Picture 1 (cartoon, rainbow, N blue to C red):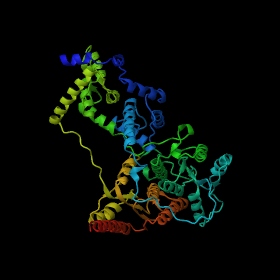
Picture 2: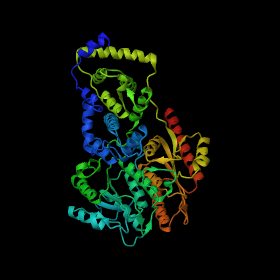
Picture 3: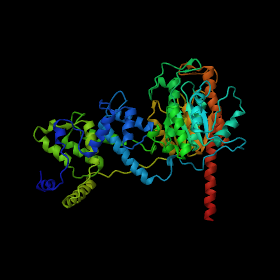
Picture 4: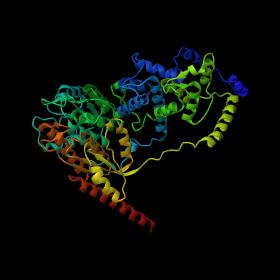
Length: 588
């Protein structure tokens, strides 16, 4: 050890002694940050040493971090991939440390730069609402969602609303008639609050689409999702279908997974509006009463109210853990599951692109001298803990320390200029058109839409993949955010649940969109499963509701893919030509 470094270490303020943890081979606490995180982790891990989806959410909530379900799923998926772990259903302490500190940093950044709610999905014009003439009294609560044969309105919601003295509109009738569409629409427009329940005894396809539109339209929606239906009117849905969020090529064909995907898309879109999702109807009605009686927003409901709050839903998570794994692999020993003490410091420096004093490392380094240094190594979980403490270590205020740190950082910056190029920011990739809608077993994008768009000099994003799982929800959301226009195709060979939900949401937001819708034909078979007459009626009813909403908002609807693509191209060219004319007029 150099003479200068020894003098510097002697002048450092005393810090926590982590050597005891190191000698006991309990190498996960390296200072106050990891110690505090461990106390939270152990409160929710049920002495298993790992957190599942529910306990991970609870642990993050305890740190005032409120991720969406999609963000939690992405964390678990990334952690499992980085550790080559099966099943993909939990995170370990080191991974939790990385995720928690990443979210804390992201929250701080969002607080500084966030100027508008849901900025990533800002539309070019205010959301459109269908015009209407009111001929009915306003109601405080609209009870939307699953209808016959459900009884949740009369059994639970209405008695509670009467106790609170709140007026309500119940759209459920014994015999439904088309003229009720206009009546229900007015009731929804006049209501102070919309309570939507997606029950687990019906497909509720139209209700899923309706809830998505209202959320996109910035209406105050309290959404309850009870789960997936196993049986609808005596018809059993595909029992062999896996309900796992990971959808492979085989089981993604079945009806339950189509509905499951639709539920997850709706949950993600609603949570992106910072609205909580409920599983219990009674709790949701109590929260609705609080919102109306106390004049608060739905997003202000918290865990004490029985709600699961959401903050900063557009934040992407997981990249820090991926970077940590890359650094670990770059400097690991021959045994790829371990990294030496010496290499761990190099890996940490490479992660942060800077070098500063870290007394904890010196303690470990000194303690290792009592034995063969090569035998003292970190596994990936321990390395994550060390990285977390390194990232959150605060430099002491000792005058001598400041001088040394200044000299150290100056020398490091000069060396880094010669050794490697500094990291550069990756620019956001913008595209003209997002090609949404039916994916499975289709070629309309490659054969029709993409060639037409290219011929007119327009770029596009194609979300079609051979294998898809829920982690791509966030990736696709970013692509939609960075696309100026949208073309959605709801094909005649697909149930189209998730796609209809997306279209309804983005139409509600006022996005520039062209829609192609094709009805399902009776006798249709999907993935070897013949759809029943009732199933086709349910999915076509959702299509009918979607086309009604879209047409009211002035969005073009067609039933031919090529015509829809040409229509979108004409709209884009007309809009750009108008912009050129306006710019020329300003110049003159």
